[in-house]
Image (cartoon, rainbow, N blue to C red; front, side):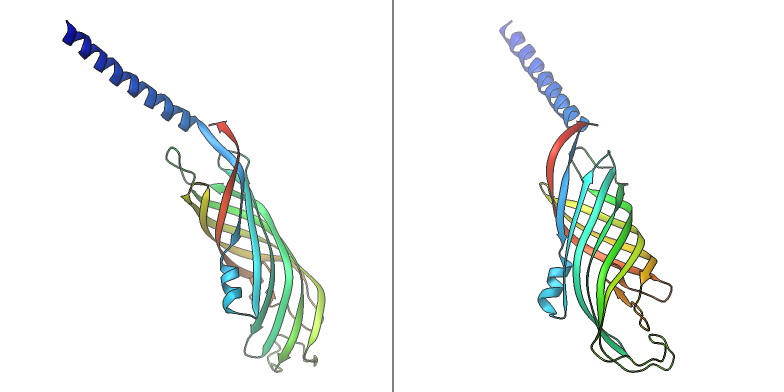
Length: 230
């Protein structure tokens, strides 16, 4: 009889542990963490360290508003000298990009990784300084009107939209490494007379069809705010 009681106790304890584990799993599964995630594009400080003519800083952030939807923004400042075949110029200015991301990755219980697609609206305020140039007979950059070296063009603006693809991976608790690529299309740009905006902060290199591509590599931290039932 004593052995029977021991057996019953062991069996009931086993099922009790199983029940508790299942309840814990259900609790984790039903809770989703919402918060503000902030970080930086680590590529720009590295570039600044190795290249004095190219300096920049970009702050990134997002906030979860629905289960798979995030409001997102990038704010930055850049000083960049561009040297091409016929021209050398320096661009200096700031930008902001705002939009949202949709996380298409289905996480396991307790995971918060992302593979996302998003859209952005970007606006930039900047100036260009023409350091030196060689007249180009094809008229790509100028309209055959001489411009003095060192001329500064101020109060320039640009607006664009972008399609973004990216991912974020939680490497430590609430600490994320991420990367993304943006395909940009110019909406409008204020250009100086007799000169083109070949580089725009936040947009990067402007190609002939007013399109561009930009990348970032981010390190960010999630500041938890609330937990919601899934």
